[in-house]
Length: 345
Image (cartoon, rainbow, N blue to C red; front, side, top):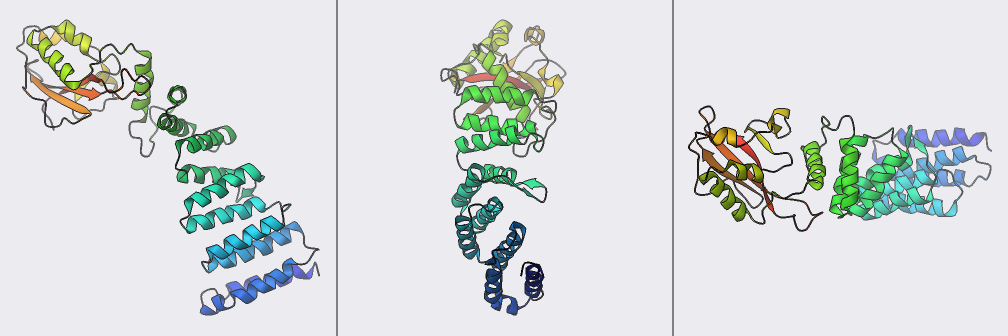
């Protein structure tokens, strides 16, 4: 019987797929499954032969769109065959079936269950545990869980991932979970990667700039911030009115203060050039608009000023709200973060 089974199985599989494009395939699915079920009762089957039959039975159900049937069949098989070395694969098929039913929380449970309870296997050269972690990161709804999965990916599969991107995404999850010390530590790991300044991360266009600002801002004394936009605006206007370049230099952010045209990027090397306001106030008549520019909003503000020099007469002073939950006394304050040269584009 053992030698006959592979041949008989091949005949059944061939018969099924030879008519998959016809209604007859659907009509015969029940009969095909019964034949395969009979074959599965043979106690002399090797684990590989059992795998072939179970896999075919599950795929027959999937072929007809019977995801519930697939789930019931595979769960029943795993429960009754706890020693089957392919159980992690059957659970993976179950998880994907739940995804097909848009039952992501249940799929998450199965992906996580595979990691905790079943040995890893390779599917087409790829680790099942690796596949599970990739899916869990996509569907998990809590930062705490995503932190766990990101760390496991980094620690277990360092050669199959982009560490630079994952460090950045992990730091973001730590921020969401208010684990600020870990967010800082992981941001430093991101910045220390050789491609941190050049990597393009989907959904994170300013990854390097934001991480650099977080680290540098944390290590600064932050004594240039104001409790409100009104206080900052008033202090800047008073310093300009009095031609007090020392005060203006004091008010400038000491972390990543930029001075650039509207077309430049804040991370450009020449946008971070240090200079004193004294060099531009001496001998010039500096004026400013009575009101903040219409571009201003609850997080950013622009003050139009002019008279700085004959080359670029108009400067827009850029103010922004501080986003630094690590320090409640500073978070929500306002800072003078940079200068845009020229009229708005």
